[in-house]
Length: 499
Ligand code: ATP
Image (cartoon, rainbow, N blue to C red; front, side, top):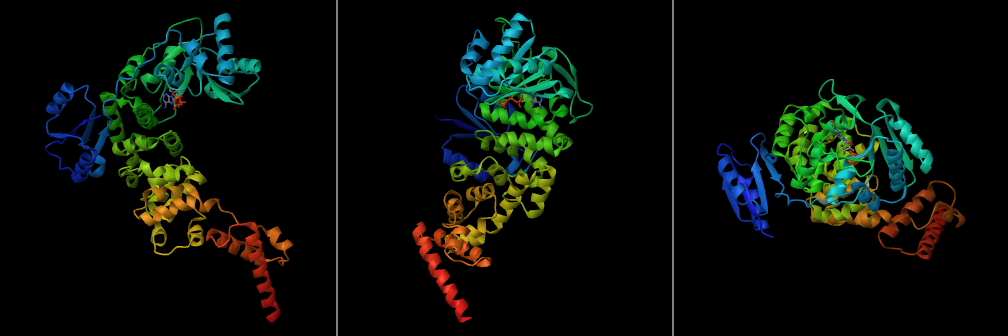
């Protein structure tokens, strides 16, 4: 499908590295047109609505490579599911514990008039025809008491957070949140909210985006509650906050917005984007703790495809607010990722950390208050990058390659395997991840002792030599390993006698 690529270049702005974007345009074979006037740009945009449109816009607030924002191609209007009875539709698309809990709550809603609602993500995903994940319920009343009652019926456990009026019913195959409807106030921007019990409308009004503010009452065949226009925004493919101060109240919503936008192929509503950029420039992300910031970053890294959200976060200057050195283009070569796929979501943290100096890496670790696992990925990525001269050198036996990398987290190796400028290093890093790392020593210490090896450091040394011989392809089978070990033990015996 062809697309028109349009660039808006304000006259006052000198495009930085514009040649790279020219090349990107050329590579994609998009016809391209540049505009220097916003109205001309908007007019054209209006005329050609309906043509798949990719817009590269130079953002006047930033500089360098951050100044380019890729606005996703105009989202094709998502086809909303026409669902008359949402709860029946949900019952058909869930199984096991989720289904048992939904049915138990529906019975209470119908027979005991319990005001309980299915809210947020599952309703959104149902309307979009996407697979449902965890179910979230809101109760106008004592949610922990309802959760205990339901857990007793379905044979689950309850974890209660009484301070927040929330509870989780845990079954072997699912975890379902049951939450007391509440309204929130923020003592200061970025603070955790103060909450008091409220009704469902107040609860929907405290949410992040209109598309997450839909509720399905569990009683009868009631229609969806949609006080924030969530259905309309799902139809238009738009992420919209519920009020102008939303990003200031809770800046984690900035990263959440980007995550949903990229996951769903939506776009940020114009006002929402403007409010987001204003909040970012006003330092909103600096008002939240490292743990909360990392929590939302983690959700991005755990997406099925985190690269677009990271690139968008970089383009909007969000990553640079964590640390300026993270602000470069999140140039994630997706075609190389399969090599690193075995490494898991934290490989993307390594990808972000790859260009950092040791000092910058430490600053990022501190800002995000990283737990050990995260911090090691960041530090190891920088350490692996520093080994690249050795990794790209002419002769590197497999055993040497192994020992260069054995202490590094696989995510760090995966990140370098994606980003190293040296093809030789990339190939070796991938080989380490996909094969060498899995190769274990062919014998263990007990085998060597049984073959007559004396207890002591010799056992460790021989095991390492056997491992190296296997890595270098000198031996492949266990009998070969035994033969080699016997020869070494004999030589060792001769040396001891001679000595
Ligand atoms: P996902 O599909 O990523 O799990 P979800 O919608 O289930 O999406 P959660 O992060 O589990 O998202 O949050 C559940 C609901 O709580 C959201 O749908 C949203 O309405 C609300 N929510 C979560 N975080 C915030 C926030 N920071 N501000 C306001 N509402 C929030």
